[in-house]
Image (tube, rainbow, N blue to C red; front, side, top):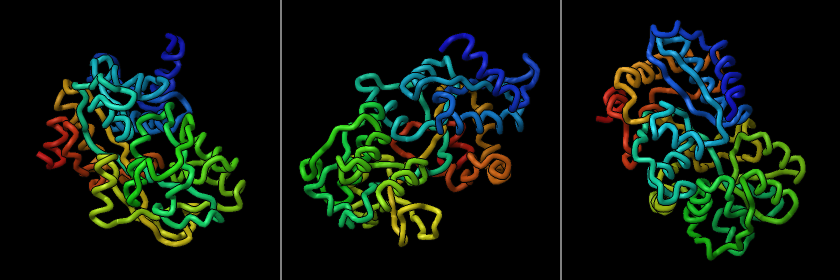
Length: 317
């Protein structure tokens, strides 16, 4: 990123975050996705909330994605970032885009809120369940978002299928998967339930539908054997989610806070205490943070190393 671009981001965040005077507070440097992305919006909202309600000096620097900024958090050049668990889990384990290069200095701080995803099909496809995808064409690979591939395979596993049971159709990203569904090149694709392209796909196809996931213990274990941080959430048929004519369960993963292991305990304690005690109030002024709750923050991830200060505040230690 150019020096000019970074300065522009710094000034923009400073303008909305109420920075304390230099030298009077601890610095907290956020990494984020590129400006305009959902990830940048989440990190900028957190930066604003923390800057407005603590004595921390918060800056947010934009990058192309987590493969760029998580290594900088790992190296201590950045302090903290909000990221989805597919990317964070791969970084910690050295899988997917971090293959063979585990980011050993990253620490899980807390879960923020769920991001529901699922398998999208055309409403008139005749596909009613994940098991019905046997022999069907499924969007696959997604090298631009390689951390999401296990969630496609985990979805199949929930329905008792393996990759050998479907016809895999390579696409570059989940967005390209939706385009392939609209053009008739695939029968199903993984996507976020509340993303903007859902409405476009629904209009183009004359209706889309989300396949229900099996909530049985056995099916969830099959899913989590492939996608360890995935879990199921209930989706109501209340008109708020396109393609859900009746209540279903779908897959979700979390936005979480990741930090370098050497970020001071006092800093992490201040951040988590703010989010735990004032989460609902913060959500009133910034809808990006509206789903933060004490219950979400306390969601445990026993397979991810947690920052000790966060564990102490949230009672997981």
